[in-house]
Image (cartoon, rainbow, N blue to C red; front, side, top):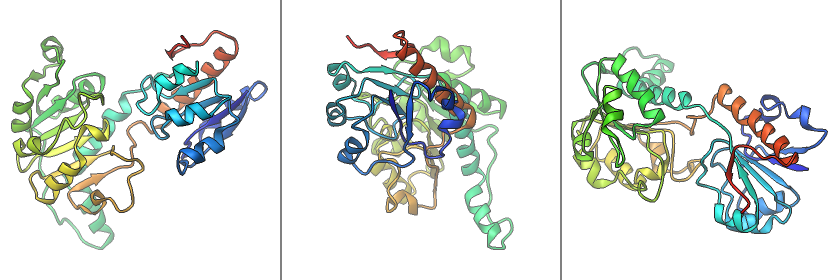
Amino acid sequence: MKVAILDDYQNVSMILGNFEKLKKDFNFQVFNQPFENEDHAIEQLKDFEALLVMRERTSITKKIVSNLKNLKLIITSGMRNKSIDFLAAKERKILICGTESSSNSTAELTWALILGLVRNLREESENMYQGYWQTTLGFELKGKTLGIIGLGRIGIQVSKVALAFGMNVIAWSENLKISIANENKVLAVTKEELLEKSDIVTIHTVLSERTKNLIAKKDFELMKDRAFLINTSRGPIVNEFDLVEALEKNIIMGAGLDVYDIEPLPENHKLRFLRNALLLPHLGYVTKENYEVFYTQMGENLRAFKEGKPIRVIQMLN
């Protein structure tokens, strides 16, 4: 069975997934770089029966699915993937399976961005390499208010760290249960209250049609002019054009971003030139521990599929 491992940027899949042990039954080919476009992807993948997909790095569109005549199985890291056309796969009777994932890595990175912003770590680090010493003034988190949009697994982990720092924690989402907030010592508020009161707003909700452009121009105008926005969820939850404008006009103090509308972020994108934007290349899930789970379980999924007993199924054939 021919298996394509897509977007292995760090070239670690064969090691972390122990795929060498599966070579008797599977013929693996690793793709380390993104495809140029749909036609390029189709040309490169036309002979494969299974695709191992790393998050949403490559969009598995209807055109791609329709033109990969040998394709029988798609395995994605995680149990959600907005970049796969599930309907097109179902029409072709292509099975889609997933893997478990860790929420720790994203929660940890959220705090890296928060601390990086409030203590001016980007500027201070750059200045150190230029020979300077202590050029900015940061501020403490104790007594400040953290607003969490989406109090799920990751949001709850983020809230626990905030409470340990002595912060006030408030939260909002359209389906937030008061009981969940109370259990985690978080105050449930309206969206408007969260934006107006928070010193830091951090996003941990799932991307959907309902949450697309959830934070836009009118929302930035409600925020404090010394507030920071953190997004480690999905780029389109925040209107990127309005965010750039808010940063350029200093409507908010700054933003820490790990996700974008287009990934990789284009080289000439305005965000790359803003001093009050702390940018990372979607590292939220990029840890050795997480990758070991992804690739090991992908291997388990492959073997189970070959044995006719698929596991971790996201979408059945019928």
